Length: 490
Image 1 (cartoon, rainbow, N blue to C red):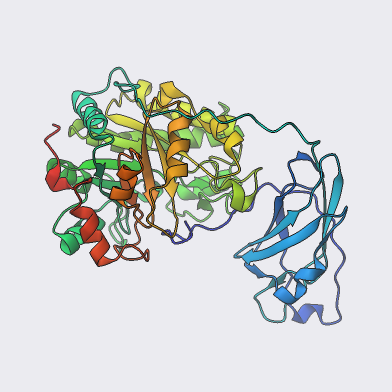
Image 2 (image 1 turned 90 degrees about the vertical axis):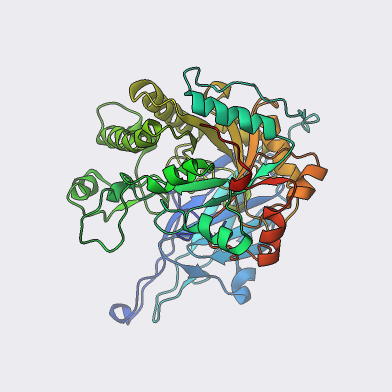
């Protein structure tokens, strides 16, 4: 995940109350301010946490480090222990073990243990974080597992004939062959990655992924050196006309304030972003009519609908995966308030409401019936109880995807079963993003009926197992489908 374009970073979330020790010095005017803590997971005073293990994440306003020689200065009360400390970019993750149900604890990080990278910089202030662990509960019963038996029709009863044909094709190939897929490079609306795979292997990926990440900049002024104009849909239309399938996602940029939105109308997009560490945009306010946040998202939905309509008018079905990775990564950033992106930081209910609003607008207001709706499950071990909370519901979803970035080519048995179980086997499942490609032969030998894989846009060899020979092996496998293998679905 950390190899992805735009440098996906760990997230800083809603600010929490922290107690700081004072810090002064004689040469204060000659030093750089210390790293400031902006949030923590869990929040100070959190109750009912689950033990015996817990990851505490401290997020700062800049990249920080924590020297191994200082790890022993970090302590936790109540007989628990600090087992690991890891600093990465803005975050310091402190792993705790030995927590007991019904007890309260205090985690202490002394002054200066966390450091910035700037020269002549003040030491960081001390942090004291209290929390309590819930009483132990009975162990859960055995998990019910399902076999894949997807419904035979799309959730949109008014889907176009071409869209229905695509879905029927996916049903037909489920358990037989995986579609090969790649995400577009650079400006997110080109076929460069598709063509580079062809240059390497002699075959084009069957599925091309595109992104509305530059929606704010479209259409662009003539003097911009990097043109991003979604009014030009020649790349996805061309791929479809050559027999391929089209996938769109949306890294949805939002303004940090109403003032930033007003500036954006003049072409100044400072204060826009999609990471929760950068953006204070409130999903709760965005769901309320009459707020500027609501006005903004409705404007953006209308804009993206206009571009999707170009594809609809050209007869191009779109495998549509909005609000991806909403829940973030539970284990890496903690069980609570863990979202990387603003559409997840308000929690599961708010995110589901936004997903349903988006679907209602695109389908019922803008009349788009060329969309196959994909929901991304964050299938992280240890957070199974959280998965179903984020699922919008069978009536809103056609396919369940899992984004998997692992340093291997295994069949992804755990993620596969998680995706199947989420909808009790009723929905097709896919590796909606990956780095290293899961070996198609291993997947089918394991009985994993992934519909496709889609390699993220980091070139053909930026993941260590995706060697030239492996790409050739995958594209020529009896278990995969290239664009050259596709039937006409028009």
